[in-house]
Image (cartoon, rainbow, N blue to C red; front, side, top):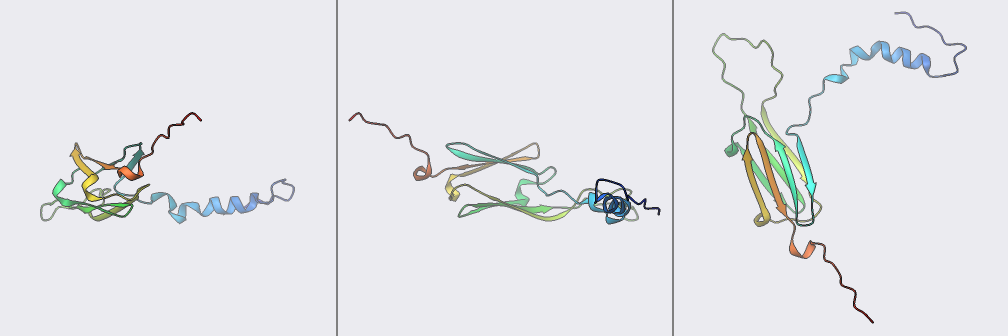
Length: 142
């Protein structure tokens, strides 16, 4: 591999970048698996809403727990049954146990949590405790 010298370059790190670009394909850094399940979290005055993408997973295989201010979604994605003698041509989906923890902006209790699953998307709403809800303070005239 040829590494050009940069004797008159104004960038002192040009040679280093050139060397790193040459070995980048061997580092295999671009094939990392994404975090599963993917989640979105929204916060409002009354509650926090969480959605998690769990396609192909039966709701009975999912556990949701809340402790202090951490909500945990865990479960297992089961591998499909393939016929004996069949070989994988391409296997890009991961299978097995998973767990994802989301830190909530307040301490929550189990009785304020609702969960629904539709079309492979788990929707969780965690109600904010009454004592933690923002209150408007009225200003009295003096």
